[in-house]
Amino acid sequence: MSIVRLPGLIDVHVHMRQPGGDHKETWSTGTAAALAGGFSTVLAMPNTTPAVVDEASLEIAADLAAAGARCDFGLYLGAGHGNAGAVGALASRSAGLKMYLGQTFGDLRLDDQAVWSAHLDAWPENEVVAIHAEGSSLQTVISLAESIGRPIHVCHVADANDISLVAAAKDRGMRITCEVTPHHLFLDVTTPLGSGRAEVRPRLGTPDDRRALWEHLDVIDCFATDHAPHSLAEKDGLDPPPGFPGLETALPLLLTAVHEGSLTIGDIVERFHVRPSEIFGLPTDTDTWTEVDVDAEYQIAASGESRSGWTPFAATPVRGRVVRVVIRGEVAYEQGKVVAGPGTGRDVRMEGRAI
Image (cartoon, rainbow, N blue to C red; front, side):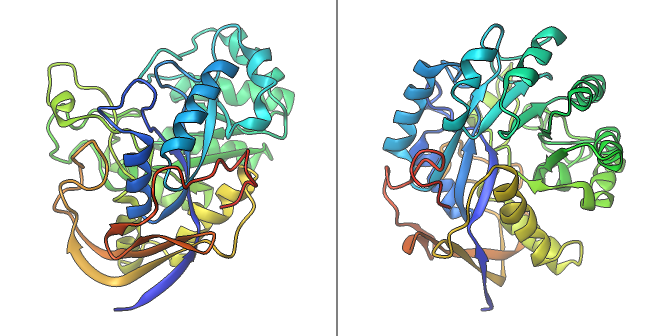
């Protein structure tokens, strides 16, 4: 056993499904999965039912999170038609603004570029705008943001074209950051998952796309799971929704890449702690950390703490296991057991912003 201590790990992109999708995930089960995966903080997306698009829906989501979360959390607000001013006034209570300009689960997709501009103008410059955009929509929103000097964060970059767009914008001096998911780093269209279980947005790329992401590691600011749980019945049904669970598999996969020489421990710390805390304005806490046994070898289990009950990485051999997670000096997870109870997590924007 070889134990390595990492600082508190932050996943800046998860879906907890409450309210409206409790059969897929709850704050209690989702944050249990986060702890089992080594994370001390998660930032949750707004495409719930109802979507988090105003003060009333933010309060509903915040109450559910406060009652159920076992680790620390933050909540995104969703950009919609006609709510640019309203959500801008709530910016200090949120993890950031999420703009859906590509295909997504839910009804927050924005097709009108005038609405894009309204949100980019209205949202406070010191707060994060997180963008779901691909291809031509990504190119357009980069141009819009660059023309007004608006920083943006691009979610789950998935192919060679899009990572090149982000790289070129950075080379021009634009204030742009991005994230990449482990499933886009480790899976592609040749992976035999079955049609329903392979459904995800952005879609899995080609082997060349996956290779391009690894080759642009210096462009990638954050790793993020885009934990998007759905039940197996839904994934295997006639109209499978897009998304993979990812909180419990991300760190073992990346630690395995360290053993294989594709990454370093420093790369993981940079993209799961340093850059997330810098980009999202989250101060660090020296009493919060994750311990991993970097030599533990095993196969990823078919199910874990997440209510979704499956993973596209089932039976994948990995090297690196989460041993312990400590949050603000209190053990939250230890030796395969979730210790922290529901409601022990804090809202990082409302209660000290500690991670």
